[in-house]
Length: 245
Length: 216
Image (cartoon, rainbow over all chains, first blue to last red; front, side, top):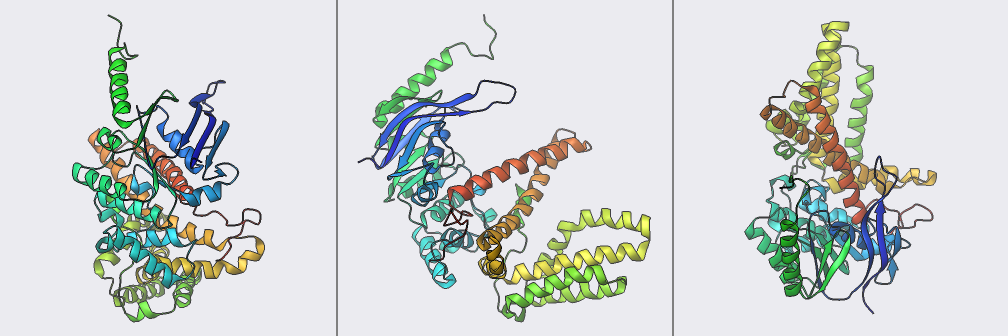
């Protein structure tokens, strides 16, 4: 049985000043059982919407999303316990002033004893090589360190699935490489959207999203080639901003 | 955002007498300072209270710089309040009001500088537990405090960034160019924070039927 199932999922949102809703995702049916799944596509194509469905942050207008046997609408609390979500900007995710406190915040639900919680947080930070930064303000950390910390805070509760929404967008080359290695070493199933095609090549399976549809589903090499061709075709087509010659 | 570097009450590790003071007593002092600001009528008493709280802050080992920064954060708004009160009610009243606010700010800074945030949250949960019988969720009280501590410096930083952007465009005297972007940034931040908390399953009751947390 696959761990993630999308069944005829569409997502529509109301648009101000228009009677017709905007379709963000259209009739998506997928079974995701691979350990590493990449989602690539242009800005606004529907990648983030697809990822947010996995954690119940977005509810489908039609169809169902089931993660490890739990519907993301009927059992959202259980789904969120199983699905960790890392956002593009770690600063919007880190709630507490320091790394140690943020990891402890993640553990508040599962570990009620404060001493035990502190021990667990310490071991999580040590595992990610962040112990020396544990008591620094999150604003004093580099982008890569913040992203690793956000990852550590999410992984502290040991989710079964890890969803990452463009995690390398704000990172320099060194930190991107660090993140890449960290992700490669995780036990969790990983679903990640990215504009970094090298990162996409590390995946077991790649989905290409375009205008709310899955237009390619297959191997990373073929997926990246398909996406490059798609981008080239879009660039060659007359754009809205250009006056016709 | 450079203004974000300052976090209210960034905990300062230490073993001073203030660090070792029970949390309930620190809460009590903060509450007493808040209540006293309504009762004190003489500005010299306010000045004395301010001196005492500043002394406690320095005794904690948190240092002059942190004390200065805590005061500097509220200085612009206190200046406006002080000038208005001086114009309306005279110098002594203006001094009393400004000093009373400063007493509360420094008292809160003493609490947060000498208490780890997790300890603070556990304390808030403990205080809020009696309200559970009325359907309140103590963990949500704690989460609210955590988000508040995080949001104030963010908004200060957003204001600093927007002011720089407005300066770069020669719009520093246009209040709309300052207020509107800060407002929009703050709303966007609130939504992102809400999403991040929801994604981490924080703030949700363990038992949705009762709306209460279950303790394992």
